[in-house]
Length: 192
Image (cartoon, rainbow, N blue to C red):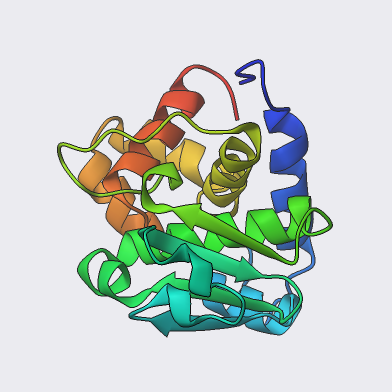
């Protein structure tokens, strides 16, 4: 799938390259959900922090008016996740971490910190919310998170077995409803 703005195949290859680096004692390549926290910590050496106020992150005091889902501090090697969202929507927490890892691997040379407004994260759970139009870097980070958390070699057989039973697949992969639906749409369209 290529939306004209990003190279989804290249983004997915980056996610798969990360998964291939994961030692078997962390993840066997088949068990679900993919252990994103262990991968972030043990493979990338990043620290995940849950915070009620992401503006308390070093250098982020100027973000007072923004509602953030996640924040990547490349210079500190930290991913900050909105604790309230993480508690309310565990699948969104996992997707936010994956999204920030995408920024880390794809965009870390662009800025010492990368932050994501809530509406940009593709894993939102809110029933009546539509995501904001995404800049290409945000679309890349979403595609990376989807490939990391729902690798094609695992989601395709699950889709073949359960079809559009998004609830079962969402629970299996530990992702949000929206992120799972979008991934299934890509898989069903023949894209990875």
